[in-house]
Length: 54
Image (tube, rainbow, N blue to C red; front, side, top):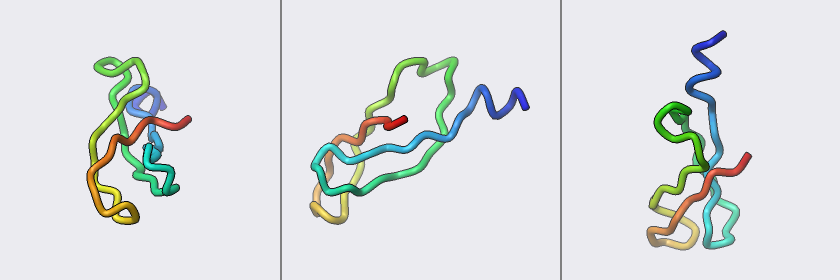
C-alpha cells in the first residue's frame, strides 16, 4: 500500500471555470504542494492553468 501513498491520484481542474478536469498521478516527494500544470481545455479551446483539486 505504500506505493499508493507516494504517488496519489489527483484531479486537475481548469481555471477557466469550464468544469473540465484531468486525472493524473503526482509524486509527493517531488511535489509536496498542490501542483499547477498548463494544459489544453477543449471547452475553452485554449491552453489554461489546471490546479490540483483535492
